[in-house]
Image (cartoon, rainbow, N blue to C red):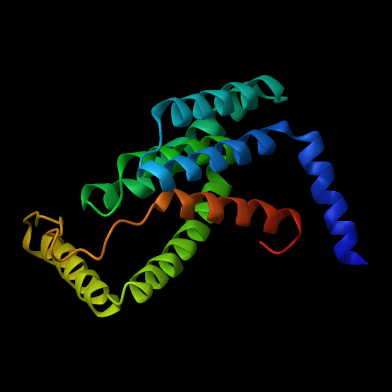
Length: 194
């Protein structure tokens, strides 16, 4: 019976908070685009972030605080994903998508959404490598990336984090992982699991 009550609360949240509905629609569109073209359009990420900033500011009891929360989430989502982009592990569209998610969720919830996205991404990467028969290659690449980061931290030089095409296991549309992780977090939070 509690599950039914939680489901009703979830439906009520979706009906009363259009921000979440817009976020979910944008995430689905981003996932489809990333799957088909390995690209997430700027109009989607910038438009979504602008909508979130304006919406949170307009409906809030304290607009300056709401704007700072939304902008802080945007900045945090961008900042957390930036090192992966710098290492060549993730595309710029993925970084901008997480920044957009941050604008919708705010500072505190962005951290959880990123964690969920990383978990989904890790599982997807392992599954992707396993299905392609390249799990050993992926683990070798991950080890090389970690040693490269440690070397840059302690030795003070910046290694080229890019993997040669012959050594890569392939491209994973990470926007899908961000979308599933974010939706999983929001739904789990609403149902009392996150």
